[in-house]
Length: 632
Image (tube, rainbow, N blue to C red; front, side):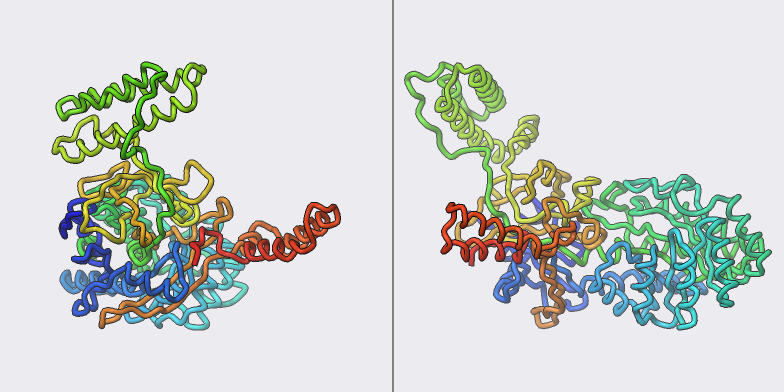
């Protein structure tokens, strides 16, 4: 096959969405590039997989790249620092990572480590997340921001944490929650660090627009807000109210929405200060998006701004509003989770087999075949470029008519099999002619409906739940052969026994496509696919559909010499482990199976010598990986 080093960009647009982290080598392999180690050059991802395979770590696996996580944290904090210096803003930036975006210990630990030089903190939306946050040694100026519904136990732990030096902020979500805080504060005799969550009326666009505006779930309207302020004054706790939280939205696609929402948040900040609240921190919540498609436009899976522009707009807007009101600049806080962690993880899996919707050749028509079989085969005689649409229409018509005749018993099974094979052969020829043509028309769209199915070793529901649930797009690319023109197009089917377990929307250089350009499977080596930017939410939202558990997880760090260090390995769930998640005791399962084997021996249907084989097979399975295991 002819090799072309520019093919990957022409087809998959890797440079467009890869952010300089994901690139393609001259050898046609997806490679990982650490921006902090430019001298080393990109590292081959198939090469990394080969090394891991040598160590006994197989696909499917989730690969976390610690270097990417560090890069994103540095980028966010330095972009805010640059904007603050350029604007002359007179307060620092103190970001926090929302633990809910990725609660995995290896991720949170490294965020704390990489964020320490920037006083980067954590956001906890539940008691378990607060427990996680308090188990980390944050820098002395880092924040722990507590959001969500909080009971007395949650509030008590948050207030007590201040005795250990934590800057733990209790964000009041309602007047009722304020009463609980007042009660616990009186009980402990410790002043809390309080915030209030204010609902903004500005609603952002995009997939998560319902998380913004005055119909959003959390936060208070103006009436509730003033009731809380008055109650804190009455309880002599207004001096503790130092932070205003105003969530701009999630995955905000349009930077102008950032400006508008920030401006509205500033109006509340000014008015609350005039009401006597000694506010010193302005938390503008989440919203910083990820350009999954690389389109750089305002859409559900893209954004029309850079991190630098986001930071500059926010800093400029707050500075102007505070200067106009003659107020001190507040400490700026954002809760950027998706933008920090999404790029750092990728799901890697191999293709197990294919269902091809064309055929290289066709059988001869039998003398006693129905005339429609003969008519179908005759289409090949006039299959030329100028009549290609006509040929497709005729072939589809004859095939559909033959299927109807088969259902009525007029055509037998062997005739139907010959007809299907002839049709698939014609499809192959038509696909080849369309691929060689520069014109894109209705026929190309029709051919998308007969794309191949590549059956892959992963569970959509476990590892890519947002793809299934909300049509989230992630870049998906073959990891090898990217300098060779793909000869097939396919949708991806997972290993679950569910028709929904498929991916049929793909990011390509020329837009979103219902099929992915792929290669015919090589006979001598695995064919790997990678799903990129899955670090946000995907690792903790997954379910146990068909009892497929967590995949193998590997965390690596890219080295300056072009190699990598294996920092951590977490073996994927065994069948025994997932059984325990759904209330089965694995030991009871073994005992029940053993009893059935012994009963079969007593009944004479199983030989006593077979008992060891049967029990061994059952035990091997119950202790094995939930995914397809290649023979070694």
